[in-house]
Amino acid sequence: MKTRGVVAALVLLACPGFSAAASFFRPLGDLDPQLPGTIVRGVSNGGAVVVGSCVVNGPVIALPFACRWTEATGWQALTEGDANAVSVDGAVIVGNAGVLGGTSDAFRWTQSNGVVKIVDPGRYSFAYDVSADGSVVAGTVFEPFPEQAFRWTAATGAVPIGPVGAEELGISADGSVIVGDGPTFAFRWTEASGMVSLPGLPGSVGSSGRDVSPDGLVSVGASFELLLPFYYNQRPVRWSATGIVEALELLPGMAAGFANAVAAGSVIVGSQAVDPRALGDIAFLWDPIHRSRSLQAVLEQEHGLDLTGWTLTDAGAISPDGRAIVGSGVNPTGKPEVWLAVLECSDPVDSDGDGVGDAYDDCSHTPNTDQKDTGGVGAGSPADGIGNACQCGDVTGDGQVTIADSVVISRSLLAPPTATQAHPELCDVDGDGQCTAADAVALRRALLQPPTAAIQQLCGPAKP
Image (cartoon, rainbow, N blue to C red; front, side):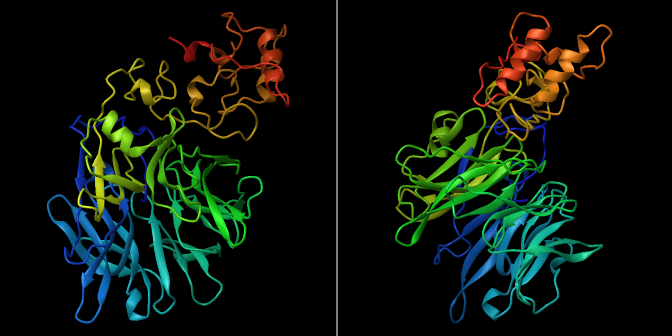
């Protein structure tokens, strides 16, 4: 996958199931040292396999090749074209072959079978992302017109799912959710809903979808604002499963940005820029707890990595387990170069013992290895950095605080009760240690527009 991955129990820098190893930053160089120009597009669990495109000096002109990197082998060329994504274990790679030969064929690569084309030849196709186990592929067929996104499995072949407007697709861990670009706005697809447009920010003229979280609940990309006379400003955004759009903060001095990839726990990486007409000034990392931060600052200040002389300009992908990030930058010699950063489990404080350190745990005092965060206050609200397990007020257990929770609380307090709270431990939102009618009233007032009360995170699961 391009995260772009799975393992819902993990949040960035929290690594249950892995032995803690020292964080490291590694320049990846190029397949052909005489022709720098490698682009990294995907990384597997723990950074074991990196995929992308490498430039190779051909007999007449330089050629782009789909390439694969491991610690043992360095860069290896797979076929002419591009490698766009990799499965969780690094065993399956997808991309497109033969661009400069006049054709482009979506392919699926494994060590045993090599490059296998998965769409009828001559249709000019690209494979952009792959499910966690490598069994489902998302891509685009460009001929015959109009362009069609497709979902491929060995059993069904490439099945069209609807028209697209640009390159890049993302797929969830189980292959059930696909996001990408429609003719004007981003889309989110499931078999049940079909293609549903994802809006831009208020005043936008379009949006672009780039990736979706392993659980399929969070999509990321950019919203486009028309800046006169003739260019667009890109703002990094994320969408909830219901299509609510949220802007990701720009770092100081930045005017534009794009969210490239999202990992479990809604951890997002991408690029921001000073000039709204361009990208690639600074790589950023966003999570619901810390919000937008400079990735380079996080690596240097929190993980003690020595990046002297480097400028990290873009973070293109994050591994399924949240430990590895790949991107591009400018090395100490002033040349562009791609890199890999692998991060240790550096947070020793884990108050609830669920394997996720407090600094990155969305319920630090209630065990929740899944870190699931369906929403916040209000129906359809986006993830708010508070996990479902400790979302005070959510007595119905649907991950969001809605009027239904207030109704259930009121009815559960009747004598005899006419409703039952699924999670009575989440009822106390006023901090008096009891579940009373006052809590139901507080919920109703918090849901008003504008709210006249605030839901306090004072219930048992939310505090020590």
